[in-house]
Image (cartoon, rainbow, N blue to C red; front, top):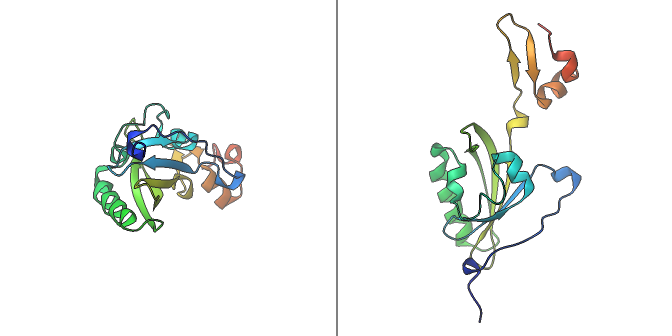
Length: 156
């Protein structure tokens, strides 16, 4: 009885602990098509949760990571409940490429629940102008050096 899960609209509410802010949760059908994703995914990929459903998940990945994702999805789909983790390169809708950690788990209905975290914040990034002054630094750099972002700005 009833339609197969891929034939119905998927709607869910995702809640997260404070520790998990910024963790994207994506529901992907057996064909690799996005059914839904949470607000954190909007921040990670730069597209709204209304734009993503119906699109292939691999469109959110850099071309070099597509085959790795497809292999990981095949492994996850082979055993319900198995966990497959990969570090891949994703891309925003404006084409910026960045590292992500992707965890895939197959559900009993033949779909994938994916947890995705941007690893951008783990990489120290500093923008330095032509005279060698710091113009911008991400949070990881701030934590590494123990200065506020304002303190770092204009330092040589």
